[in-house]
Image (tube, rainbow, N blue to C red):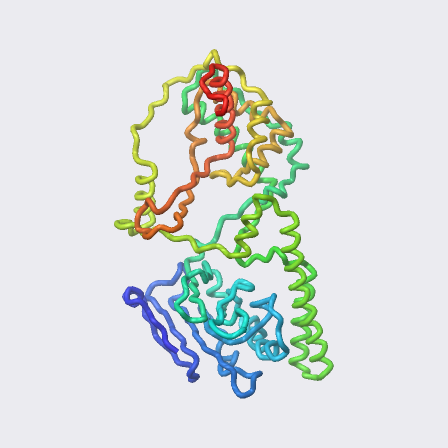
Length: 477
């Protein structure tokens, strides 16, 4: 076994190899004077192993007790373990010998509190010769102290010429990993909200307000409405460990399987082993059936928009490239470089001191709002407030006067408030670039507030109608 550590890493951390007395196992203790990853731990351990078959095919050269110690600090276990198990590759057909040789390892894993990091069916070995099928034998496990620090497990690096593909495991501080709770807008309690939305009042705007005064009044009404919607919408915390195919029935089967397995180890009688084997077979068969059912259901209900999601699930998603820009050492510096490139500074626009209604502007009608909403996709990503178009459609269906009263002053006064222009920027890399050390190798998608996009659609429709009525557009436009 060998380990390579970058010199820049050694300048900040201490790396101490520890040999376990077995030739195929190498442990590295990484230590620092400062706490690591924003935790209270000053060190973590990486165990790398290469486990091979012995004369007795049921026994491997590296035993589970050596691989999976119970430690009180972060532990990462990686290696080519040469074992096949339904937990890592549920679609594979297993021989009794493969099951018997891998079972001790995957039974020891939960006993030591570790979790498998490999995504199911993500192959790590592709045989270069012979008729062997691709397999999942390069495994990674994390104990409870390290699991919150695991940001990603990725196998998208190019081949090194070996039949094993390189794997990247990224660790980061928990505060950087945790995403904020996300509202589940599909589960909004509209039955409770219905009377509240019907009774929602929007204060009338002044006839000739100043821009800050108009922005303040509009923001106050919008924020009250957004708070009311979020208060009656459950939230979820996205996680790459989530299993959308999991069912309550599988929870019961898992509990029964572990109970029977513990009883078989304790009493070790033929009858108890048979019961444990039956429970295990039923549990893994149910997992396979649940995954197939979930996948089939997803494909049956797929829309033209979700076909891209199906392709991503089938082929996997490439790891996004992080900008590496010259002269940008910190996130703030990188943010400034990207903003200066995509949004060069311009001369500041001075709004009028007082806004006055445009006498020629027709009053805003509910039909215009409904027409603008009908063209908004419910799957479009929302802006900073997180409100999707589907929620605005439901609000407008219950009480059309809300959006009408919020947007009417903006249309009549011809003013787009600064609070509606705030947005989220998503940096994406352009494919096929020879180098990613320039801001031009990336692009930014700007996600503005959905209520602002509704206002833009209304104004765009009015401009289009005015241009056509004056013959400013060609018939084919």
